[in-house]
Length: 374
Length: 66
Image 1 (cartoon, chains in turn yellow, blue):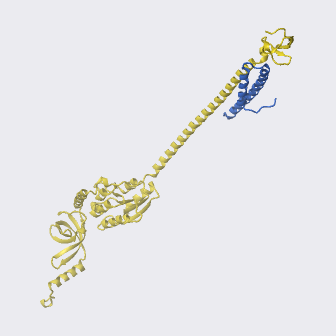
Image 2 (tube, each protein chain N blue to C red):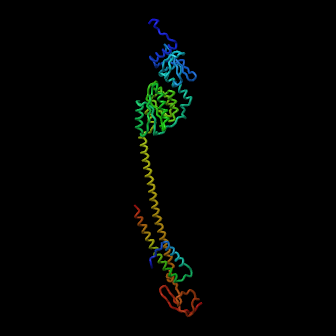
Image 3 (cartoon, each protein chain N blue to C red):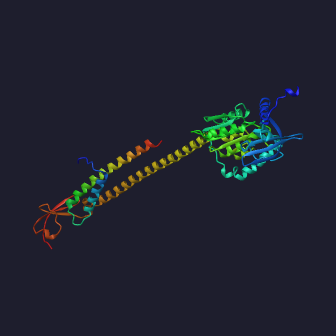
């Protein structure tokens, strides 16, 4: 091209053109590099570089992009938009950033854990007990995952009749933290909220599991008014969300086991209780029947005694009556003396000499007259 | 004598009175004889009632013992 054909631009025009070109050819980039020169300005603005052995690029963002404390040397994955600032030159505006690589992820989690621990988020006193069994639960997981299938299968085998609300979220990747936090908040704001929130996923690489050690998710779990059960299926490290939860389980299946009792056990216990009850009843009846038999025996005895007593008394009285029989007295030699009028004579003064007397013996009688009284 | 329907207890009480009077001093012989006859009648009735009660108890006992 000849010099006469060159287009002349002003500086501002050049910058505008440059930005247009960038927007057209490279609207968004994802760069992985080592963090350097990280600083926060005025508590709001984020400035840092990403570098590797051959080059370094400047980045600009806000504190809202952060998901935990960062240190120089960490490996970061940053998604951003390249642009040329009219005054400050080229930089990439941060959309999202997250730790990359196992080492960094671990380090970031360590830093965040110290910070949140100091704030008291993981304190044992904060842990609430879960209703056992719950009637209404909120499940936050990926519906396509094996974790979801496992959890539901075990839950159904052990217990039925639970109302389950499911929030289908990404459980890994850049958008995961945002979706998980949204789900937690949505459940908390329901008019009739669930009694427990279960946040769960299966195992994976540290990168896959990063969301569950991010600041946003950890704070959301800690701040949930609804008690939380977090089960991130992996063996080695515990994610920060699990530390913040009211209860943690080692796997999604384990979560179901902790959440509800085993129906088989409960039925068996009821069976044993029913047997005991039956036995106790029988025992009680036996005791009562025994008492009734004793009472009847006592009754018989008392009746017999009363009759015997009466008979004895009657005999005594009859004997006494016989003794008092006036006729018996006569047999002994006593006599009854009557006057002519028939009146019984008791003393000499009752009669006059010459009067007729009737003397009655036991079986005979004599008529006599009074000779003399004295 | 007409059949009495007094209770055992009442008959018993009357017998006690008869016996008491029979033992008193200065009792008229005629009255004594009268009382004696009355006493015999009472013991007869009491005897009858007692036997009836004993039979009833025996019957009930047999009925309820299983």
